[in-house]
Image 1 (cartoon, helix red, strand yellow):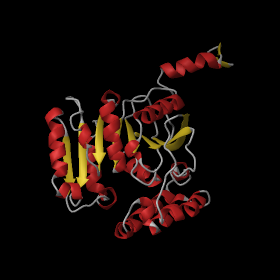
Image 2: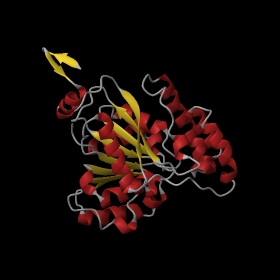
Image 3: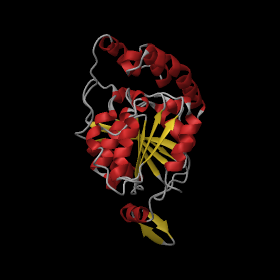
Length: 313
């Protein structure tokens, strides 16, 4: 029992009061792990040789090494992440710099990796998300739901987003190694689980997807556009079968590197023009002289464009 002004209140009466007031505000930036029961988790990853031969050693490393070392190991065997040796060589110093910043961060340095979950040997019975909560977060704090690219939910994704959008709740659901096929039910369960954990409903989120996650985000958004404030698709394009499924009032934006094969071929522009016929507010931007990894190589320009597309606070 608690006593306030001479009135004793039990916890069963306090909980509705907290919920009515929008829950408790976060006192300092933090990252929390949120799990929930699900029947929609990703199946275990499957690889052909030689990647399949490397997988047992990689899983062992997942349970013994920090994520920075794990990613460095994976980049030494780029086929595991679907990369060419040249791409891995370009990414290695950029990712290493990001993990060096994570190591110095009072918020992120102690956050556990989601990669063991992504590379699980069996289909998980629970969903998993890492959630960045800014200081003072409450029911009015804007929300980003980020769908990771191929290879797993790397911590540097969230750290980079938090560096530029630290006043947002950033929800990063982990879904195997390929979010291109993430079910909309899994994403909805994730948002609901975060709301339950915080003791309040969260704002209608912006859905942001990168690479394979961009494809998955297009699928999730067109299936239930009413659940999201808008869609931002990065380093990907809307699948052909979805071009006519964007609702007229959809807020959607697409950003890609100018050296991408689908940009150079004109396919990117064609698809966006088709979407715009049905959703005229659709926007697009090309990062000139950038390839698939412009989020790392052209971070400032990319984040500037994303900031233009996000709802005004």
